Image 1: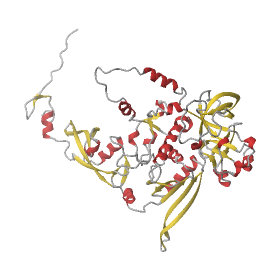
Image 2 (image 1 turned 90 degrees about the vertical axis):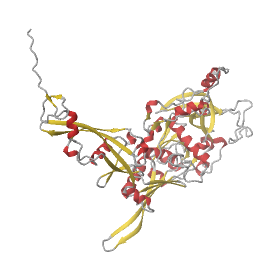
Image 3 (image 1 turned 180 degrees about the horizontal axis):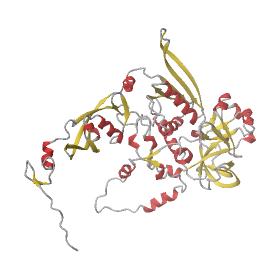
Image 4 (image 1 turned 120 degrees about the vertical axis):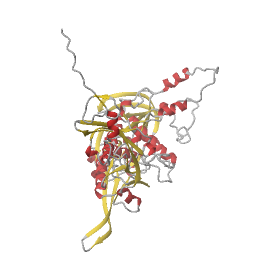
Amino acid sequence: MEFVPAPAVHRVLCADCGTPIVPNSANLCVACLRNTVDITEGIPKQASVSYCRNCERFLAPPQAWILARPESSELLALCLKKLKGLAKVRLTEAHFIWTEPHSKRLRVSLTIQKEVLTSTILEQTFEIEYLVQHGQCPDCAKLAAKNTWKALVQVRQKVSHKRTFLFLEQLILKHGAQKDTISVKEVKDGLDFFYSQRSHAIKVVEFLTSVVPVRSKASEQLLSSDTHSSTANFKYTYSVEIMPICKDDLVCIPPKQARQLGNISPLTVCTRVGSSIQLLDPATLQTCEITSAVYWRNPFDSLATVTDLVEFTVLDVEADGRSRGKFVLADAQVALAGAFRSGQVQDENSMDYESSGYTNQIYHTRTHLGGILQPGDTALGYFLTNSNYNSDDFASLPSERIPDIMLVKKTYPNRRKKNKTRAWRLRSIGKEAGEEGETGSGRGVVGRMGGRDQKKVEEDYELFLRDLEEDPEMRSAVNLYKSTDVNMKNEAQKGPEKPPFAMVVDESPRQDEEEENEEGDFPEIQLDELLEGFDEMTLGDGEAETT
């Protein structure tokens, strides 16, 4: 094969530095060309963006305020729109350069191209620094003044606890219904939600109607009117009352209404709360649905709540063979927890059953928990034999139709005693204690009014977390997030390091004994049920809820 030499490349000397280069129209090398021509001329190297700290929005000129996360494409587009002169060049690449979050600076790297001479295209990369200027958007400026809200939604439930509002808060966060809320205020029997527009309040009332059984009433107050233009300025108030019956409550339906609901037994347990409540007769597995319209025509209260539940030890369980959904009918023999233990210590908050003759007694009952109860388990139930209820409907029931005990749910006392740190957390509309200057001791939106017993607040929150752990159906309705404090707490629990040559004590038998005492079917929340991004929550953030 004959060798064919490559064509000779003719080179010329650079007109400035004398470096041999390929001939071009300017007869200059790249370095000299950059020193001669600046393609970034006319593009400012510093700029500013306006940021509202209250609603965490950026100003998109001329008047729009948009939500943009740090280093997001929306924020990058906003920064590029602030630059003048980009229309004269070709933008090939743009990205953020990391800066400290508290530095109030944004750094953007740009790569542009421009034709400087005939058939000569020059590319250059440079940085632009943005100063984040804090200010107030018009909406937040109105909120800073007094009496600027336009509509108010008053949510009330006349019960002794606030667990319903804790669950309602999680439903609001999951569906993004909090993004138009100006502020949330805790009052005696519920919460107040303030809005700047009437349509936002109406939307929230419709949302509450779809998730919990409520009845609502609207009212308006005239602030000012103009007789010449026939216009008026109103403030609107919507009163929403939630049905005072919660999950696992003991309910006695009025006998007349019980006959209308399929002739169900009047003594029932509430098993589900949604747009309507579901009541279950544990002795027959018969259920009935009570809607808001039916309930408010003839309202009734619950006989007992979850705070009146008593621990029982299951001695024997025999399934009946009948089932309805997840409920399995069974005959069970139970006794009071710790009934047959010697030298037991009496709790100061518990009732003295020993003096009343109920300690060593075995009770026979029918329960709907036959699918999960085993001999030796611990269950919570209502001790009807030793209770006195102030209800005419309950007093009118024949004594043979009132069971001694009505079991409600299974509990896990051995696991609860260890107080293990949960690997998940919940978001909140309100700030937690110690967060961004918050000095209150509330849990979620509960406990911030002042005057409430802190022990009661913690108890309500703990019972709400246990309900989430033990009820997969309830857990599927809220968003759970990975906790970032678990590893830190576990390291702190290890204690200080032992000095060298210290005695090592084998604690494995003790740990094995504790593990044997744990319930094997404790409802653990799996890692795939948890979501990321706990620290990205804001009151107006509607995008973070769909992670």
